[in-house]
Image (cartoon, rainbow, N blue to C red):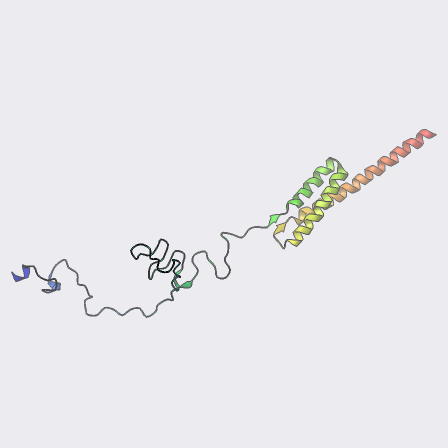
Length: 183
């Protein structure tokens, strides 16, 4: 009956009491600590002014506690998911090269100018195509559309040649008509 009496917690044999777990492992001493400890980043500097504890000795909002790593810090100094070694990278895939807008405009003006005011449209398209080609070559691969600029240049040259032939044919026809009436 002495065992049923209340007493200090260390009285009696712990192994005989049902429902209680021993506080140390069976078999004696605790296991040895692991032999390898990964390197940890140094704790960040305290951004608070000196002597400025924030409420009851607790760390401030966003401040990592003792032995804890802050948000965004990776364990062992390795980059996290999606991060790469070296210079910081942007998110997602790299930007695809864009087509130079003046190359597209030169091609559209060359085609439309073929039917509406041919020599003027051809000259504008030729100037735009030359400027677009220079910009594309100077961009180092960021801009595309070199084929459009070359096509616009070819169409503009064909327009100018056809316009010149039509103008010369018109002049010859006018002189022919004048000379035919003079006889």
